[in-house]
Length: 95
Image 1 (cartoon, one colour):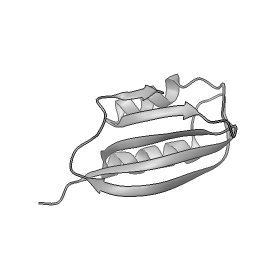
Image 2: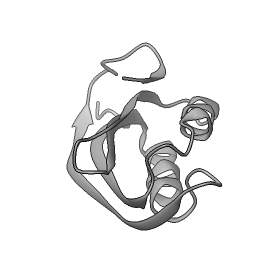
Image 3: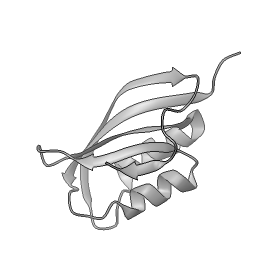
C-alpha cells in the first residue's frame, strides 16, 4: 500500500519577513497540513509542510504565488520532496 502523504521543504524569497505568519498557519491548517515556518538570517522564510499530496500541491502554489497579503514573493524553492508513511508534526506552527 502506497502512502499519499508527502513532505517538502520550502524557502520563500522576496519581501516576506515581518509579514505575519498567521495566514500561512491558517492556510496550512485549513488544508489539513502540518509543519512549520520561520525567518532565516538570509532574509527569507523557510519551513516544512507535510500532508496529503493534493493538499501539498495546493500549499506549494499558495507559497509560491499567494502568501501573506503583506508579502511580495519573488520566488519559492522546494526541495527534499518525499513520500512519508506518517506526518512528523502534530500541527502547523511558527518555529
